[in-house]
Amino acid sequence: MKTGLQSVIPVIISGGAGSRLWPLSREAHPKPFIKLADGQSLLQKTFIRAGTVPHVEEILTVTNREVFFHTQDEYKAVNPNIKTSYILEPIGRNTAPAIAAAALYLANSYDKNTILLILPADHLIHDQQNFVLAAEQAIRLAAEGHLVTFGMRPLLPETGYGYLEVDGSQELLKIASPDISTYQVLKFIEKPHADLARQYVDSGNHFWNSGMFCFSIETFLNEMNQHAPKILNSVIESIAISQKMQKPGNYLELDSNSFARVPDISIDYALMEKSNHVAAVACDIGWNDIGSWNALSELTQADSAGNRILGDSVLHDTANCYIHGSDRVIGTVGLDNLVIVDMPDALLIADRNRAQEVKYVVQRLKHMGNEVVKLHREVHRPWGSYTVLDEGENFKMKRIKVKPGASLSLQMHYHRSEHWIVVSGTALVVNGDRQFIVNANESTFIPAGHQHRLENPGKIDLVIVEVQSGAYLGEDDIVRFEDKYGRVPQIV
Image 1: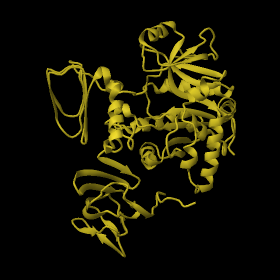
Image 2: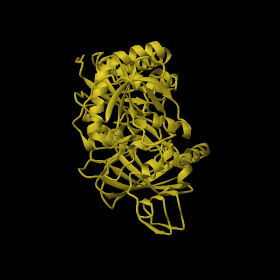
Image 3: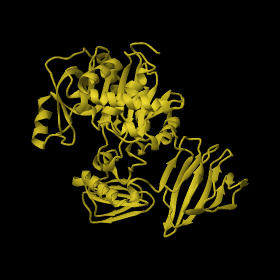
Image 4: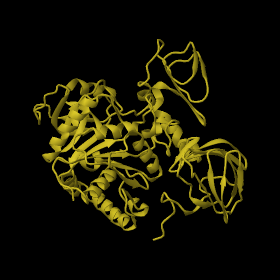
């Protein structure tokens, strides 16, 4: 077991679909994977930020099984040298179970005094230097036995955030920084109405609740045992069952049946609001939770008419709009104060003052069973990605990209046949009893019911066009027999 009071493990919480940023964010490509103007995703920025904190031993990420391999690819692209580990949730049960699972998992290999720094994967922080200073003060408080939260100095009377009320009469630590203070937390406050939010800003003793936390493994587990024993014990049970089924590796995949019985509750409700040992690091670090289209739009420079534009657009008599394009030119005439987000498979048009209500559109689409809630046209897989080019009754056309050395599972479809045309690279194909090479400008046909596999034995990406035909073309018509990524169901 690793020991040392100064050992720090950042825990990145990467869950949720980010429905308020639909159609850019989807269930299978959630908000943390959104790329910003510099080409990095929110998840990558969080990972980089976590690695700058002193005394970091490794970075643990709690995420969904479906985006595990995509998460690994994101991390490798920015820093492949940091030690990483993962807890994979079959379903989201909110932050209290996620953090409890992280603490219990790490308690198996680290000293009880090890400090956990809890970071949401989808927040943006502009002042990296002040973030590190704030984290260092949180670590000091956590080492003294506090549950620490981070309060952001309110810049305006925001009604979309919860607030912390602190005892501003006495600071807990002496800090040589005007941007960082430490206080005892008196109360957690729900999202207020506008008049109350203005009072909070004027008081000087209220801060936005950021959703970042810091505590030792021992303090957290003791406090959970006192204030939320049902949650802690149910997570302990799920981990025990999961570990019996787990192959050795740098991740723990939680058992779906037992984890579904864990209460769905946030860490604020389950623990922080009940404990008498909560401290706050109040700081100014350029924090933005990117919780709406308006928040995301502020990352783009406005033109003289107040428009913020990404992509190709031609605007006439248009002001105060956020326009996010992808493949097409967007033309506007006589518009004011709108959000326009154009994706290949979905278009959002909303009043900027009501941009938060896009979640109701997502709820309606989910009720209808529409796939645009879950998937983009381009879908990431552990072996690469595919893009839906066209589809209609009894047919679907995809562009499939397979990374060098990667392969799809050995699989079979009941309801569809597939025609593969190699565009570039070399394909190693299993088709029934045969195994053979297919080169660029060549093709092969996979009848329904045939076991088959596509593999890239080369050193460049393999790109094929796949034409599916059949009565049912859903992604769930896959029976896997072998898979190098662990996606064949385990029989226990």
